[in-house]
Length: 147
Length: 209
Image (cartoon, rainbow over all chains, first blue to last red):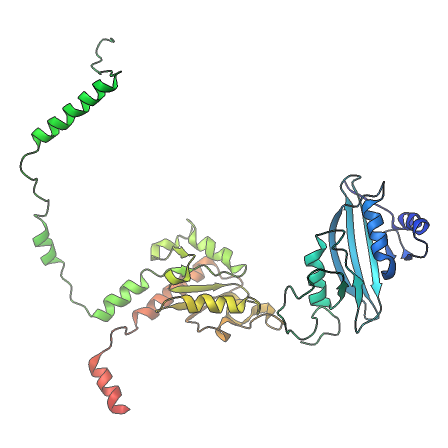
Protein backbone atom coordinates (compact mmCIF):
# COMPACT_ATOMS: atom_id res chain seq x y z
CA UNK A 1 0.00 0.00 0.00
CA UNK A 2 1.23 3.45 -0.88
CA UNK A 3 2.26 5.45 2.19
CA UNK A 4 0.94 9.01 2.48
CA UNK A 5 3.81 11.21 3.63
CA UNK A 6 3.12 13.64 6.45
CA UNK A 7 2.89 17.14 5.07
CA UNK A 8 4.46 18.65 8.18
CA UNK A 9 7.59 16.48 8.08
CA UNK A 10 8.07 17.02 4.38
CA UNK A 11 7.51 20.77 4.86
CA UNK A 12 10.37 20.83 7.38
CA UNK A 13 12.75 19.18 4.91
CA UNK A 14 11.73 21.54 2.11
CA UNK A 15 11.98 24.57 4.37
CA UNK A 16 15.63 23.65 5.04
CA UNK A 17 16.37 23.54 1.33
CA UNK A 18 14.18 26.48 0.23
CA UNK A 19 13.66 28.83 3.20
CA UNK A 20 10.37 30.69 3.14
CA UNK A 21 8.80 28.57 0.42
CA UNK A 22 6.12 26.92 2.56
CA UNK A 23 2.98 28.84 3.48
CA UNK A 24 1.50 26.27 5.83
CA UNK A 25 1.45 22.51 6.32
CA UNK A 26 -0.80 19.95 7.94
CA UNK A 27 -0.85 16.20 8.41
CA UNK A 28 -2.34 15.66 4.95
CA UNK A 29 -0.79 18.33 2.78
CA UNK A 30 1.46 21.32 2.46
CA UNK A 31 0.81 24.68 0.85
CA UNK A 32 3.64 26.04 -1.26
CA UNK A 33 3.97 29.72 -2.15
CA UNK A 34 3.26 30.24 -5.84
CA UNK A 35 6.64 31.94 -6.37
CA UNK A 36 8.66 28.89 -5.32
CA UNK A 37 6.25 26.25 -6.66
CA UNK A 38 8.47 25.17 -9.55
CA UNK A 39 11.59 24.87 -7.38
CA UNK A 40 9.77 22.80 -4.76
CA UNK A 41 8.08 20.63 -7.41
CA UNK A 42 11.40 19.95 -9.15
CA UNK A 43 12.92 19.08 -5.78
CA UNK A 44 10.04 16.68 -5.02
CA UNK A 45 10.54 15.02 -8.38
CA UNK A 46 14.29 14.65 -8.41
CA UNK A 47 15.64 14.69 -4.85
CA UNK A 48 17.08 11.49 -3.41
CA UNK A 49 14.61 9.81 -1.07
CA UNK A 50 11.62 11.63 -2.57
CA UNK A 51 11.58 10.86 -6.32
CA UNK A 52 7.93 11.76 -6.89
CA UNK A 53 7.98 10.77 -10.55
CA UNK A 54 4.25 10.25 -11.09
CA UNK A 55 1.62 13.00 -11.06
CA UNK A 56 -1.72 11.58 -9.95
CA UNK A 57 -3.75 14.68 -10.69
CA UNK A 58 -3.93 18.45 -10.78
CA UNK A 59 -7.16 20.09 -9.72
CA UNK A 60 -8.37 23.42 -8.40
CA UNK A 61 -10.79 24.70 -5.76
CA UNK A 62 -12.58 28.03 -5.56
CA UNK A 63 -12.70 29.37 -1.97
CA UNK A 64 -14.18 32.76 -2.99
CA UNK A 65 -11.32 34.75 -1.47
CA UNK A 66 -8.67 32.70 -3.26
CA UNK A 67 -8.14 29.78 -5.62
CA UNK A 68 -6.22 26.72 -4.57
CA UNK A 69 -4.49 24.45 -7.08
CA UNK A 70 -3.98 20.94 -5.72
CA UNK A 71 -1.36 18.44 -6.88
CA UNK A 72 -0.98 14.84 -5.81
CA UNK A 73 2.27 13.11 -6.68
CA UNK A 74 3.43 9.56 -6.09
CA UNK A 75 6.84 8.00 -6.01
CA UNK A 76 6.75 4.64 -7.74
CA UNK A 77 10.25 3.91 -6.46
CA UNK A 78 9.58 4.52 -2.76
CA UNK A 79 5.84 3.78 -2.93
CA UNK A 80 4.83 6.99 -1.18
CA UNK A 81 2.54 9.85 -2.02
CA UNK A 82 2.00 13.47 -1.00
CA UNK A 83 -0.44 16.29 -1.72
CA UNK A 84 0.85 19.82 -2.17
CA UNK A 85 -1.13 22.94 -2.97
CA UNK A 86 -0.59 26.48 -4.00
CA UNK A 87 -2.81 29.53 -3.57
CA UNK A 88 -3.76 32.32 -5.86
CA UNK A 89 -5.37 35.43 -4.38
CA UNK A 90 -5.87 37.48 -7.53
CA UNK A 91 -9.43 36.75 -8.68
CA UNK A 92 -9.33 38.83 -11.83
CA UNK A 93 -6.22 37.30 -13.32
CA UNK A 94 -5.12 34.23 -11.34
CA UNK A 95 -1.79 32.85 -12.46
CA UNK A 96 0.18 29.78 -11.38
CA UNK A 97 3.37 28.38 -12.95
CA UNK A 98 2.80 25.28 -15.08
CA UNK A 99 4.33 21.95 -14.05
CA UNK A 100 4.09 20.40 -17.54
CA UNK A 101 7.87 20.67 -17.82
CA UNK A 102 8.21 18.29 -14.88
CA UNK A 103 5.22 16.00 -15.37
CA UNK A 104 3.92 15.70 -18.92
CA UNK A 105 0.59 14.42 -17.60
CA UNK A 106 -0.30 17.86 -16.28
CA UNK A 107 -0.88 19.14 -19.82
CA UNK A 108 -4.57 18.30 -20.30
CA UNK A 109 -5.50 18.76 -16.64
CA UNK A 110 -4.07 22.26 -16.55
CA UNK A 111 -5.99 23.04 -19.70
CA UNK A 112 -9.15 21.75 -18.02
CA UNK A 113 -8.54 24.00 -15.00
CA UNK A 114 -7.87 26.93 -17.32
CA UNK A 115 -11.12 26.14 -19.15
CA UNK A 116 -13.45 25.62 -16.19
CA UNK A 117 -11.81 27.69 -13.43
CA UNK A 118 -10.03 30.39 -15.39
CA UNK A 119 -6.58 29.98 -13.86
CA UNK A 120 -3.71 30.76 -16.22
CA UNK A 121 -0.73 28.40 -16.15
CA UNK A 122 2.43 30.26 -17.06
CA UNK A 123 4.77 28.28 -19.28
CA UNK A 124 2.12 25.85 -20.54
CA UNK A 125 2.89 24.91 -24.16
CA UNK A 126 -0.72 24.92 -25.42
CA UNK A 127 -3.01 26.70 -23.00
CA UNK A 128 -6.47 26.81 -24.58
CA UNK A 129 -9.97 25.55 -23.73
CA UNK A 130 -10.32 21.76 -23.76
CA UNK A 131 -13.93 20.91 -22.78
CA UNK A 132 -15.82 24.02 -23.84
CA UNK A 133 -15.67 25.81 -27.13
CA UNK A 134 -13.77 28.95 -28.00
CA UNK A 135 -15.95 31.93 -27.12
CA UNK A 136 -17.77 30.38 -24.16
CA UNK A 137 -18.59 33.18 -21.71
CA UNK A 138 -16.89 32.75 -18.32
CA UNK A 139 -15.57 29.79 -16.39
CA UNK A 140 -18.40 27.51 -15.17
CA UNK A 141 -16.72 25.93 -12.13
CA UNK A 142 -16.19 29.31 -10.44
CA UNK A 143 -18.55 29.80 -7.54
CA UNK A 144 -19.84 33.10 -8.90
CA UNK A 145 -20.58 31.71 -12.39
CA UNK A 146 -24.04 32.57 -13.71
CA UNK A 147 -25.15 30.58 -16.79
CA UNK B 1 -1.91 -53.36 -46.25
CA UNK B 2 -4.67 -53.65 -43.65
CA UNK B 3 -7.38 -56.17 -44.23
CA UNK B 4 -10.57 -54.52 -45.47
CA UNK B 5 -8.94 -51.25 -46.43
CA UNK B 6 -9.22 -50.38 -50.11
CA UNK B 7 -7.77 -46.92 -49.81
CA UNK B 8 -5.08 -46.01 -52.31
CA UNK B 9 -2.03 -44.25 -51.02
CA UNK B 10 -0.26 -42.02 -53.52
CA UNK B 11 3.32 -40.97 -52.84
CA UNK B 12 4.52 -39.54 -56.15
CA UNK B 13 3.31 -36.31 -57.70
CA UNK B 14 3.27 -37.85 -61.19
CA UNK B 15 0.95 -40.52 -59.81
CA UNK B 16 -1.22 -37.78 -58.26
CA UNK B 17 -1.54 -36.02 -61.61
CA UNK B 18 -2.50 -39.28 -63.34
CA UNK B 19 -5.15 -39.90 -60.66
CA UNK B 20 -6.60 -36.40 -61.08
CA UNK B 21 -6.70 -36.84 -64.86
CA UNK B 22 -8.58 -40.09 -64.43
CA UNK B 23 -11.26 -38.41 -62.26
CA UNK B 24 -11.72 -35.57 -64.74
CA UNK B 25 -11.97 -38.00 -67.67
CA UNK B 26 -14.63 -40.01 -65.83
CA UNK B 27 -16.69 -36.90 -65.02
CA UNK B 28 -16.39 -35.65 -68.59
CA UNK B 29 -17.48 -39.01 -70.00
CA UNK B 30 -20.53 -39.12 -67.72
CA UNK B 31 -21.59 -35.55 -68.65
CA UNK B 32 -24.03 -35.84 -71.53
CA UNK B 33 -27.15 -33.74 -72.03
CA UNK B 34 -27.65 -30.61 -69.89
CA UNK B 35 -29.55 -31.31 -66.69
CA UNK B 36 -32.91 -29.49 -66.76
CA UNK B 37 -33.33 -26.65 -64.18
CA UNK B 38 -35.71 -27.63 -61.35
CA UNK B 39 -38.32 -25.03 -62.25
CA UNK B 40 -41.32 -27.20 -63.03
CA UNK B 41 -43.16 -25.90 -59.94
CA UNK B 42 -42.62 -22.23 -60.80
CA UNK B 43 -45.53 -21.64 -63.12
CA UNK B 44 -48.19 -22.85 -60.75
CA UNK B 45 -46.66 -21.17 -57.67
CA UNK B 46 -46.28 -17.80 -59.34
CA UNK B 47 -49.88 -17.86 -60.35
CA UNK B 48 -50.86 -18.60 -56.76
CA UNK B 49 -48.68 -15.78 -55.36
CA UNK B 50 -49.71 -12.73 -57.30
CA UNK B 51 -50.80 -10.02 -54.87
CA UNK B 52 -52.17 -6.69 -55.96
CA UNK B 53 -51.17 -3.68 -53.85
CA UNK B 54 -50.21 -0.07 -54.20
CA UNK B 55 -46.68 1.06 -54.93
CA UNK B 56 -46.79 3.18 -51.76
CA UNK B 57 -47.29 0.08 -49.65
CA UNK B 58 -44.43 -1.79 -51.28
CA UNK B 59 -42.00 1.11 -50.92
CA UNK B 60 -43.04 1.72 -47.34
CA UNK B 61 -42.78 -1.96 -46.55
CA UNK B 62 -39.24 -2.16 -47.88
CA UNK B 63 -38.21 1.05 -46.12
CA UNK B 64 -39.57 0.19 -42.70
CA UNK B 65 -38.38 -3.41 -42.78
CA UNK B 66 -34.69 -2.59 -43.06
CA UNK B 67 -34.03 0.44 -40.90
CA UNK B 68 -30.28 0.65 -40.52
CA UNK B 69 -29.00 2.65 -37.59
CA UNK B 70 -26.10 5.10 -37.80
CA UNK B 71 -23.55 4.66 -35.01
CA UNK B 72 -23.96 7.88 -33.02
CA UNK B 73 -24.44 7.16 -29.34
CA UNK B 74 -23.00 9.98 -27.23
CA UNK B 75 -23.75 8.63 -23.75
CA UNK B 76 -25.14 5.96 -21.45
CA UNK B 77 -28.44 5.12 -23.23
CA UNK B 78 -26.20 3.35 -25.73
CA UNK B 79 -25.93 0.45 -23.30
CA UNK B 80 -29.67 -0.14 -23.39
CA UNK B 81 -29.46 0.01 -27.15
CA UNK B 82 -26.64 -2.54 -27.09
CA UNK B 83 -28.80 -4.75 -24.85
CA UNK B 84 -31.65 -4.39 -27.33
CA UNK B 85 -29.29 -5.43 -30.11
CA UNK B 86 -28.06 -8.44 -28.17
CA UNK B 87 -29.45 -11.98 -28.13
CA UNK B 88 -31.85 -11.44 -25.23
CA UNK B 89 -34.01 -8.79 -26.88
CA UNK B 90 -32.87 -9.58 -30.41
CA UNK B 91 -33.68 -6.46 -32.39
CA UNK B 92 -32.83 -8.32 -35.61
CA UNK B 93 -36.32 -9.85 -35.48
CA UNK B 94 -37.53 -6.54 -36.86
CA UNK B 95 -34.88 -6.27 -39.57
CA UNK B 96 -32.78 -3.50 -38.05
CA UNK B 97 -29.92 -5.08 -36.17
CA UNK B 98 -27.24 -3.68 -38.46
CA UNK B 99 -25.36 -0.67 -37.14
CA UNK B 100 -23.66 1.35 -39.82
CA UNK B 101 -20.37 3.07 -39.12
CA UNK B 102 -20.96 5.22 -42.19
CA UNK B 103 -23.96 7.55 -42.04
CA UNK B 104 -24.19 7.29 -45.83
CA UNK B 105 -25.49 3.73 -45.41
CA UNK B 106 -27.89 4.47 -42.56
CA UNK B 107 -31.47 5.75 -42.53
CA UNK B 108 -32.19 5.79 -38.80
CA UNK B 109 -30.50 7.78 -36.07
CA UNK B 110 -31.12 6.66 -32.49
CA UNK B 111 -29.94 9.50 -30.29
CA UNK B 112 -28.85 7.45 -27.29
CA UNK B 113 -27.55 9.90 -24.73
CA UNK B 114 -26.82 13.37 -23.42
CA UNK B 115 -25.61 15.78 -26.06
CA UNK B 116 -23.23 18.59 -25.20
CA UNK B 117 -22.91 21.69 -27.34
CA UNK B 118 -19.32 20.71 -28.01
CA UNK B 119 -20.58 17.46 -29.58
CA UNK B 120 -23.65 18.97 -31.26
CA UNK B 121 -22.00 19.99 -34.57
CA UNK B 122 -20.71 16.43 -34.97
CA UNK B 123 -24.19 14.92 -34.49
CA UNK B 124 -25.67 17.51 -36.85
CA UNK B 125 -23.04 16.59 -39.42
CA UNK B 126 -23.77 12.87 -39.12
CA UNK B 127 -27.46 13.64 -39.64
CA UNK B 128 -26.70 15.77 -42.67
CA UNK B 129 -24.58 13.00 -44.16
CA UNK B 130 -27.36 10.43 -43.95
CA UNK B 131 -29.16 9.89 -47.24
CA UNK B 132 -32.88 10.60 -47.59
CA UNK B 133 -35.23 9.18 -46.46
CA UNK B 134 -34.03 9.33 -42.85
CA UNK B 135 -35.66 9.19 -39.45
CA UNK B 136 -34.64 10.06 -35.90
CA UNK B 137 -35.65 8.44 -32.62
CA UNK B 138 -34.94 10.56 -29.53
CA UNK B 139 -34.02 7.96 -26.92
CA UNK B 140 -34.12 8.74 -23.20
CA UNK B 141 -34.82 11.83 -21.12
CA UNK B 142 -31.64 13.60 -22.28
CA UNK B 143 -32.47 13.01 -25.92
CA UNK B 144 -35.97 14.39 -25.45
CA UNK B 145 -35.34 17.43 -23.27
CA UNK B 146 -31.82 17.36 -21.84
CA UNK B 147 -33.09 15.36 -18.85
CA UNK B 148 -31.48 16.09 -15.50
CA UNK B 149 -28.76 18.08 -17.30
CA UNK B 150 -31.26 20.44 -18.92
CA UNK B 151 -30.17 23.49 -16.92
CA UNK B 152 -26.47 22.83 -17.50
CA UNK B 153 -24.37 25.39 -19.33
CA UNK B 154 -23.21 23.03 -22.05
CA UNK B 155 -26.00 20.49 -22.63
CA UNK B 156 -28.33 20.67 -25.62
CA UNK B 157 -31.89 20.70 -24.18
CA UNK B 158 -33.30 18.06 -26.50
CA UNK B 159 -32.11 16.81 -29.89
CA UNK B 160 -35.01 18.57 -31.56
CA UNK B 161 -33.09 21.81 -31.10
CA UNK B 162 -30.71 20.71 -33.84
CA UNK B 163 -32.39 17.91 -35.84
CA UNK B 164 -36.03 16.92 -36.51
CA UNK B 165 -37.20 14.02 -34.33
CA UNK B 166 -39.81 11.45 -35.39
CA UNK B 167 -40.37 9.35 -32.26
CA UNK B 168 -39.66 10.13 -28.59
CA UNK B 169 -38.85 7.21 -26.25
CA UNK B 170 -38.92 8.41 -22.62
CA UNK B 171 -37.02 6.79 -19.75
CA UNK B 172 -33.73 7.22 -17.95
CA UNK B 173 -32.66 5.07 -19.60
CA UNK B 174 -35.57 3.46 -21.49
CA UNK B 175 -35.61 -0.31 -21.24
CA UNK B 176 -34.87 -2.24 -24.43
CA UNK B 177 -38.57 -3.14 -24.68
CA UNK B 178 -39.41 0.57 -24.75
CA UNK B 179 -36.87 1.19 -27.48
CA UNK B 180 -38.22 -1.71 -29.55
CA UNK B 181 -41.73 -0.34 -29.05
CA UNK B 182 -40.52 3.07 -30.22
CA UNK B 183 -39.00 1.54 -33.33
CA UNK B 184 -42.26 -0.26 -34.04
CA UNK B 185 -44.09 3.07 -33.68
CA UNK B 186 -41.70 4.53 -36.23
CA UNK B 187 -42.44 1.60 -38.53
CA UNK B 188 -46.15 2.34 -38.26
CA UNK B 189 -45.41 5.97 -39.03
CA UNK B 190 -43.40 5.04 -42.10
CA UNK B 191 -46.20 2.74 -43.26
CA UNK B 192 -48.48 5.78 -43.58
CA UNK B 193 -46.16 7.85 -45.72
CA UNK B 194 -46.80 8.54 -49.43
CA UNK B 195 -43.44 8.16 -51.14
CA UNK B 196 -44.97 7.90 -54.64
CA UNK B 197 -46.49 11.12 -55.99
CA UNK B 198 -50.22 10.69 -56.54
CA UNK B 199 -51.28 12.53 -59.78
CA UNK B 200 -54.86 13.40 -58.72
CA UNK B 201 -53.61 14.79 -55.40
CA UNK B 202 -50.89 16.75 -57.17
CA UNK B 203 -53.50 18.24 -59.50
CA UNK B 204 -55.68 19.21 -56.58
CA UNK B 205 -52.72 20.90 -54.88
CA UNK B 206 -52.02 22.80 -58.08
CA UNK B 207 -55.64 24.01 -58.22
CA UNK B 208 -55.49 25.15 -54.58
CA UNK B 209 -52.30 27.05 -55.26
